[in-house]
Image (cartoon, one colour):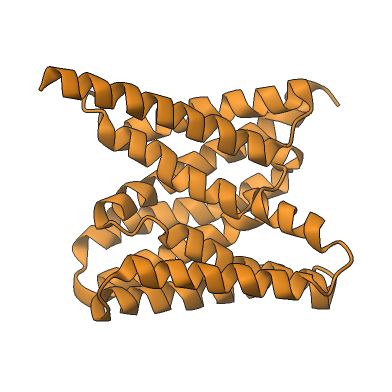
Length: 252
């Protein structure tokens, strides 16, 4: 298999992931609930662990979706009822990761499976994966651009977190929890700090450049793809934010 045959499905999937997560990332940073995606992703990963540990990998999508929707509903109601919501979400994440480890402890490959769930290798993405992801992300995008701005109140919260749960269900299975979190926060954070380009466009561009570079480095030097994406994406964002922050301070 040539590098192009191997690379293009994975890179296309990475572009899909950057596109859809930038939409939610900007909103999450605006809301100030940074760890929402990480918590939902970690709870959703319980479904993957149950599927692997008890059903030999069967029923993975419905299980992941069920746990993602459950966590999304809990968070959406919690944002309206509780103070210090970040503390609640942090505890939800801790519950998710501890549950995940307890379930995987039943398997002799628990550590390896945990690493796979945290940061999967998307270089082996298939055309079928692309089609299924594209259908999900197009549908969610239409809801977020057309329906979401027109609703209010608790329904708006439920719609937002439900759509996020659907995205996380797909993304976690293909990329892993930590990759999804990095894709959600890093490009959006960089986009908000800069002021010259529209945030959503900048998030798409910076995220696409980072994951493309990370995947190329991963392939060239035989590095874990998921962790390469996290490292390059976060490093690029931190350096850019630091530079822009210093530049802003000097201007003041």
